[in-house]
Amino acid sequence: MHALSLLVTTLRLTCWPFEVEGQGTAQDPPAGVTAAATTATARAAPPAPIPDSLPRQEAVRYDIRYGLFGSIGSLSIDAGAVAYDDPATPVVTVRAAGRGAVLGLGGIERRIEAEFDVRALGSRRWKEARRKEGTGPEHETVDLGERNLRGENRIQRQAPGKAHETQRFLSTLPTSDLLGTVWRLRTVPPVLGQTDVALVLDGLALWLVKATTVAADDLVPDTAVHALRVEGELAPIDYNGAVDGGRTARRFTIWLDRRPGHVPLRIEVPVGPADVVLQLVESRRTVAAAPSAAPRGQLFR
Image (cartoon, rainbow, N blue to C red; front, side, top):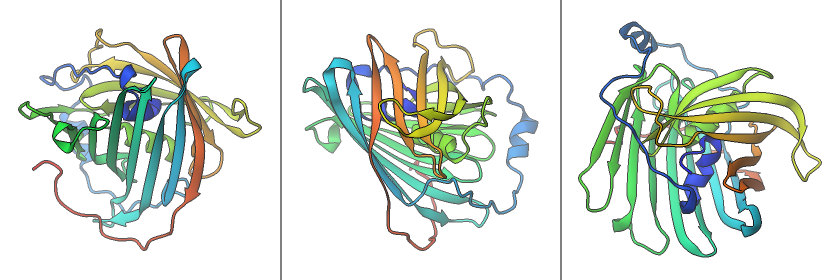
């Protein structure tokens, strides 16, 4: 299994047995990209208000389970306070760390750090790192990503023993890493019956994500908790917008807390004979910090 969008945020973070790499080519921009569109996104925007639903100053933890195997991993996500490097571009730094293995084999550790742009509702910079459990930093594969207001995306992979690989492409649809995609959905869940469409980068692999809120008052399985239920699909595409036939499309279901912040309470992804399930174990507010200036500079050196 490759990137399971909002869900894969977790699977790719932890579960090596479900990981499938893919990327396509970056020779042509996706269909529908025009100079006028990219110029429009670059225009100056007024200072963005901070929505009450923006997830921030929180720490959550999930248990990851798969069919009869039971628990196969865990995932922790921490979000900081709102910070500014420009009055018009408030950001929240989100960090995730996970590990996972099936029957004690093939353990993988994965970390993601993303700088979520509150105005654009997507990550403007991110870093993903993964390595086999028990190995050192020299065995780590690192993906650095960046998106600007003109819709230009740049991804650089640093893999042990290989030359650095850089991919660039344009996109008019909102485009982000996995954490940024989850934060977009949490900040502004689709209105009941409506669909949010975006692109998500899982490493070098690009996916078209469609997420629809299908219920505003649904019971989370095995609980008495009421939540929003969002169902979605992931379609693998190349950087030029063409369908990538080498990867499998996926579906997912996610239950979001109805309160502001919309913490994901449960995520299900059908994989093979069973579902991968991410079940919320802990959710807490962290100590509030005064707004600060986010560090300037590029991830790409």
